[in-house]
Image (cartoon, rainbow, N blue to C red; front, side, top):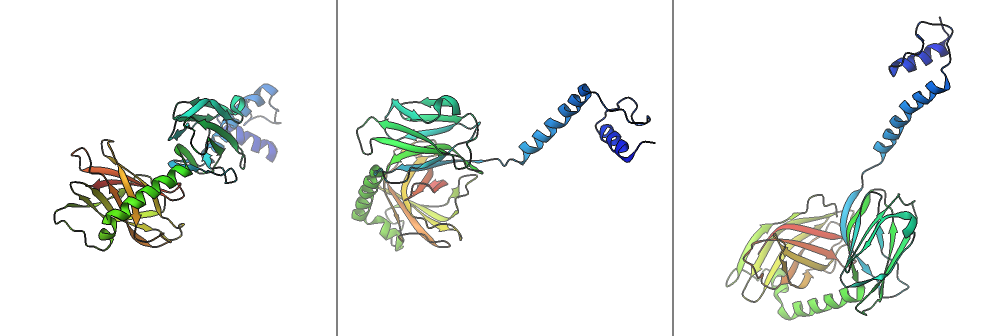
Length: 316
């Protein structure tokens, strides 16, 4: 009868369906040849690799907005990339493809595909934690800033599938114009005071839903859509969950369920910022929709440009 070490070796082989030279009956133990050792390693290495792969968490794919700063001294916005995931950067102005600079382009990327308004990127291998690859491209319109500079980074649980790249100066100008027009109209303030009813105005209540898979820490309450001859407005209750950062809407995008855009005039909230656990009404003043569709999708972006609230089931 073999030694305990012999029996352990035999049991290891039998568990894997391998009978080597009548090992379970013979004694003393005959060591396997180098060829058989290679076969055994080939059987075990894939199992270990598969186990390691299964332990790697799947990244949540996100769509968001980043703001290119006006001053060179401000932090460079980051875009989260991952191997086997194509990240699409969408610019709100024409870019000069010939000016594109991508750090490590020849060795670190599987795909670099610039367009007139877009840039598709896919890294060949995962970036190391803390590693940053810079991307720089010039705008064609001569606006400020002249270049968009972004830093590609890795994140253990998140990856950016689509990123809208906007310039801070343009965002500030649009917000100022929208707030000025909203202040002149006075409609959002009437809604906050509860003085805007359905007399002479079509009012449609709705209960909006956040888009599937949303994990931005905001919740919705009941909403109301108002539509008149010269204006329309969406008013919805938003709650910032406890433990979340403060939030305030800065941008809005309204489209019909079929994808038809509606021009947004202004965005307002009845308090300056939503602190954790607080709720407030948000009013989005728009032009009357050109079509007779009654279902819409509303996307609210915060003033920092990163925390979006996508709302479906909006009615006007």
